[in-house]
Length: 444
Figure 1: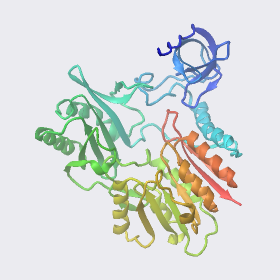
Figure 2: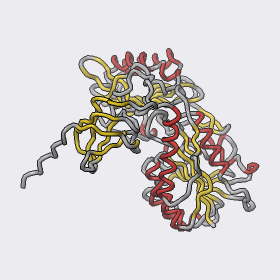
Figure 3: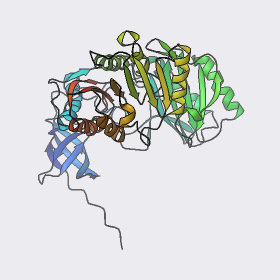
Figure 4: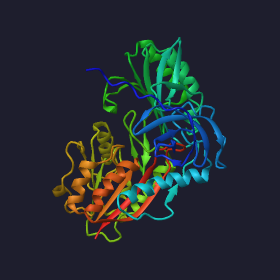
């Protein structure tokens, strides 16, 4: 039986952009009602749309001509905008852009059956604050291509700078490209992940070949020249967990402070993208804790990572709170446990490794906790939230990086009798369609 022939795109048409979609594309409709998704357009603009390929129930399209631009249109500040897939909304003025960002959270909560605050609260972040670099690497035509992927593309856009990055990280782009060009470990492709810690940029190289002795010497020299405390390596086929990484060189401790506690994150560890965003998340989480706590209160923390929220929670309530922290990544749990031991908090914080997608904390295990705090990955926590809802804890504080999965999980909490007590959007991922949020749900 032959495969069905591909759909033929409809002809170009003049359309009006009606709204912004959740991925930062303008949404319009053809006369027959078929939706079009057009990047780099804005609500109210009249454009000549050229449909390209199927997307869901409609077509991905481009605006080859903007016939009537929006008064909210701005000049993008980055030379790479339009090619690089990292930023999709630099062409929008700040006020409507921020209103749309906050509206993503508002819409997710409304869809879950809640009445969120109006206007929604948004904590903005600024250019030059991102303290994590995660670039793809490709060797092509005798040169190194280093940067982010293009929008909906496997191609890597070669970046000379990145306006969202912290200046310390941006200053590494050019010398890093020169270093990678001379490494035999990069045969065809790889990746570079750098976390800006308190002690400097911590670099993890992922490559498709094992570094040779000259490669290791060059990586060590690079670390010395640019103030890197550590360089690590893992194969591109390995798990992204820092547990599989090999240390190439360690010139000084790789530490960062989380709520006053010194932590040694593993290579490539997940940390909040910006310092300002981290502070806003912590403030919102602590502000959501119950005003009245029982004697010797216990807090359950799920998806704890290296302890971004753990140590803040342990220090709340006059230091009376006890925290039971669960995390799936072995390297992160190891870093968290080491910090607990060295800070003398072993009596107040218990860290446990557990894959919460495969083995969620059960409703029975959650019994007796005053609150649960969870910070799940992009896919949300559907299996775990079902157990939280069944446990009926008085307070659930949900830290989200995806409004869509937040809305899905919040619907479950709504069905279990929870109301929305507070919600704040945090724009850690400037000029992108991604959004961080903290929502506080209370029962009864």
